[in-house]
Image 1 (cartoon, rainbow, N blue to C red):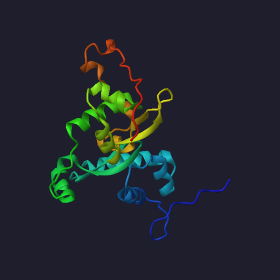
Image 2 (image 1 turned 120 degrees about the horizontal axis):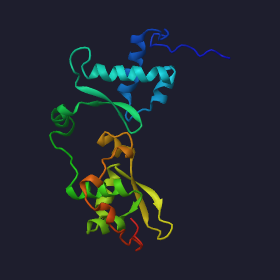
Image 3 (image 1 turned 180 degrees about the vertical axis):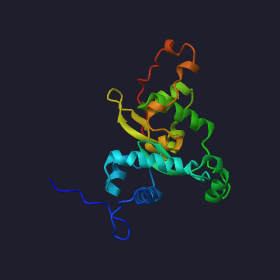
Length: 206
């Protein structure tokens, strides 16, 4: 059996020390533009997957202040991967820097539409419109443009375009998967008695 080579640092030396391995993971995470699965991180730094998890936990604890000052960033596990984020309590100065003080927020209509799709996906625009009681064509296009929704195919019965949430949606909400969405039943008494609406009307194309 071929022995797996030791991962190397930027000076060409093997990452044999605990600090070097932490540093290698940290360096990869610093340049990641989206959450990176632990398996991909392990491959990048040349370590077994079972060695990477405790290192990630240590990096997260360090950012949270385990060895001193709490950092302005945090390491989160979201959307099936790991990524550094600015800490939520510092969102205002970060937004001021990135957006010149102009917070790009979703409208109430967009939030309601996104919530319906998140819980009913894959779902057509006509189905969402039936639930909300208003047309959602423009709102859905906006959410697709922002990367929060994507097309999930078509309804085999009606040909209507179906929509689903994206990894970006999970990332923005800080969720690892859709299973982490809050349960609605405790907040909506009698929800189990609701009758499915008739969504058979064919939806117009985009």
